Image (cartoon, rainbow over all chains, first blue to last red; front, side, top):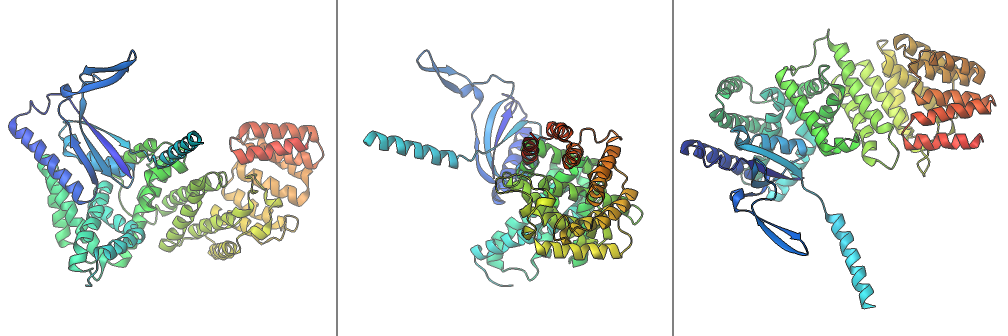
Length: 137
Length: 417
């Protein structure tokens, strides 16, 4: 099963580390990712630029509005995403707790089981086909 | 060593995983002293096999290969962790020393012992009962967190927490990874049997058809019972396996096609599974011969009497009451007393039965047990005391949430109007 892991980090925390600390964290994290990939557990990973680079798009007063900054102003901000292939939720927890980023107290990680939308997509297709057929009558 | 394609290797590894991962994991937990490290190392060993075997050929004995590869993978992991945490250093040195002196080849016997150790650890009395069930199903039976959560009607995250906490407790206590000493064995075996029977009942009492995964729990419990019978054939272990098989043999007859509950006396006995009955009867006879049996064997013996009767009317109720008398002596609980009362009613009629049920209810412990009220209602019904019967059925109805049971009680109330 796939699990999406959202890594949160306090803005500036990584940048404010000493160079040797930063190197340790980076090397450990990358070597752990390599290990996960080798064992077939890492489906995808994507680090993100700092939260202050974010723009948020929403709908306001009948038109699209764009604001600067992330949607949620929390102490820790989303810093990267990782998609794991694991046997079950406990296996995903186990794989993530080995992540050096957690051990080195760089931040925290939220695990979300991936949703299986296959059935919903099939139903939606059926609805749309019916709608098209109705219009063509 | 033989050459194989990646595809063939994958198939071979899939089947090795299905059949042997439980054994391999159990051994690794003993060698590493850590559930999570063992699981991780095992997965790494399988991944390594997938990339190596197509080139190097499949080793003559794949299981020891996987175990020893996993050991080295675990050492690597610990070395890497030691760079981050000084406390791990000592552990690495200890494990390395231990392994270099350890024998490379595992005997089959010690592998089987490891599975037994794993069962005893997962069912350790210092773990909460629901944690024992979750750990046993995940670590011994290989079910996933999500499957177990679904079967027990809790969210996966609740169950995942339960597993994480139980593992932490095993690590921190620490709970030893061993088969108990002969002195401790009766009590510890009791806890294991309790877990297996709990898993079985969780599946057995589930609504038929509606919750397929819950029905699978009975199958899992029977598999566990078989495994334990192989590893440690004590009379009560055999007795429990027999009891589960005999109860499961009535599975197809217990509910109507529309999901309504059918009582034992009204079941179509041609639907009973003859193979399971034959096996269950043979097992209970074996357990009874030992003269060291307990409550599971006696319950199995009662189930065997039912299983061998052509109908409720020609059932040997005298024999059943006698078995309940013995059961009551070693397990003097109100529920056993109630079941005995129902058997007495079949032997001596509803009037006598009612007196026994009332006596069992006097303890107060059964006040909220719907089956006590439904049994009492049944006596009144058979005695033609309709008003009292109806009020007892209504009381029973208020006390149960399970849909087939509710439908059954509502139907009885309707018939009495």
